[in-house]
Amino acid sequence: YKLAVAQRMIGIDANSIVLNDYPEKGSLSKKFLGDSLVWNGAEESVVELIKRYLVQADVIHIHNNISGEVLSFIKEYCSRAHFVYQVHSPLREGPLYWYRHESMGLPFAAFLVVSQYQPRHYLDYQPVPNIILDEPSVFLRKPGEPLKVLYSPSHTRNGRWNAKYSERLEAHIKNLHELNLIELVWPKKPLSPFELMGIRKFSHVSIDEISTGAYHQVSLEGLCAGNVVVNRADYFSKAMLANCATSHNMPPFLFADEATIDSVLINLVNDYELTVKLQKASFDYFRDNLAPKDMAKIYKGIYDALV
Image 1 (cartoon, rainbow, N blue to C red):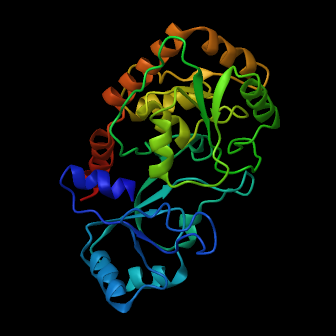
Image 2 (tube, helix red, strand yellow; image 1 turned 180 degrees about the vertical axis):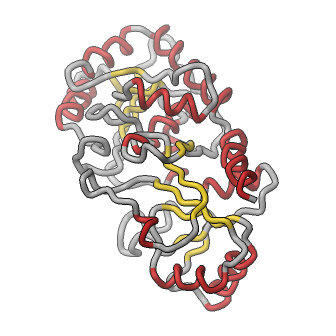
């Protein structure tokens, strides 16, 4: 839905359709839909609206996978649209990756992959940016103020590139908090993106995972919120983001791994000026390179080339 919202900012009539939300009994239900239309279980009038959107679309942009029912409808009614396929966030590690579009039977004319770690697995796809809709802000640390650290992992699964869990990281930040060296904010249940961004905007540090060479949505949100962004992003991951942002500069991520996370955080605790310098760098980078309107123009260029 964020892509559709950003496209509307630059005058494109874009709509987001999802097949299913998270289960109603789960803690993630209705937290990530935005203004998307949900197909499965919708009232007939909503289904008719979705059909109208699809039939009239110039471009149909499909993420990850869709059901056979929707495929059948698209093949029957969407004769005028150009098709774009995008890989976003596979849940499994290779060798279980596969090219799902091959089984859909649609005439895809462009193949995209979100520019985090996924381009390593889809070398012939065009990297495109994730989009953060919030206005950039920065809540600079004051002299003598405790270092406020936000840690909000979305899952605990392991894997070479999509791992977000580190037992050692969690032990370190708990210890630093118990020693009153940092003020740790660690939500114990899933929060909506709106709630989490509100907390992030009044934090000084956002910690992404430190297990792989990648970064995730947390890092982009941290830049937007003017946080010091701690992750283990390697050169390739940072270069992909800079390339998508058409920036000559790498994102100002602060590198840490399991062996260095203690010293990295303690260095920030003891160096107020460094914290402020990195916070400003994050804010500046997002403002200058990652504004949603600018990111939407990248997708518009892809659509324009097709239409």
